[in-house]
Image 1 (cartoon, rainbow, N blue to C red):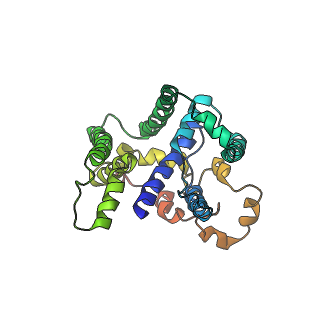
Image 2 (image 1 turned 135 degrees about the vertical axis):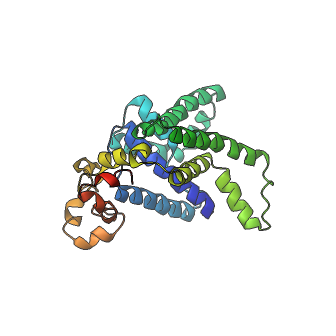
Image 3 (image 1 turned 60 degrees about the vertical axis):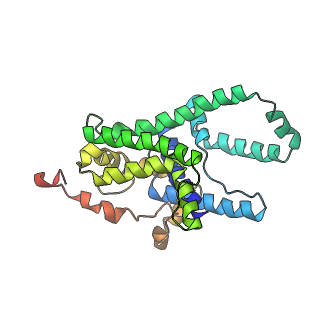
Length: 267
C-alpha cells in the first residue's frame, strides 16, 4: 500500500503543475503542493472510515477537461463535486451511465488523456530542447515509461527477489507508467552533467520566484480563503508545511540573492 501511495503522490504532484499550466496560472508553491497531498491523505482516511474500500487521489482526466472546456473556475468544480456526491447515492444515475457505449467513452478518453500528456510535455519549454543531452533523457524516459509497465503486466511473476512483500512493491512501482518515466527522467537529469540553463532550472525559478527567493505575488491564488490574513500575523505558522506562509524553500533559494560570478554560471 505504501508503494501505491508513493506512486499516487508522484502522479498528484505532476497533476498540480499540469493543472496550473493548462489554466495559465503560476506554478503551485511548496505549501500548495503540501496541502494538496495532505488533503488527499485525509480524504483517504475518511474513505476508509466509511468503508469505501479505496483511497482518493487527483484524477488526470479532470485536467484534460479543463483544457477542452477552457473552464478552470474553482466554483465550477465545487458545484460539480456536489453534483457527483448527490448522484453517487442515486443508483439509477449510475445505471444510466452504464448505457454509454464503450466507443464513445474511448473517444472521450483519447482526447482527454492526450491533452494531459501534451500539457506535461509542454513544460519542457523551460529546457533547451536542442540539447542532445535533454533529448536522450526524454527519449529514454518516455519509451521505458511505456514499455516497462506493459512488460510487468504481461509478466507479473517476473520479479523474484525472494521476498513476497518486496515483489509486490516493485510490481506496483514498475507497473505505474508515470512513476517509471518520472523516476528515470529525474534520475538521469541529476546524473548526467548539464548547466542550469540547459536543464531549465533557471527559467523555472524565474517563473516561480523573485530575486529574493520569495514566491511571486501572483501566487496569492494559492492562499487559503478568509484565513490567510490572520495566519500571516502568527510567525509560527511559517514552519507548518501546509500554511501559505511556509518558507521552507527560501533558505535553499537564498543563494540567488547575490549576483553569481562568471565562473559560477555553469555551476
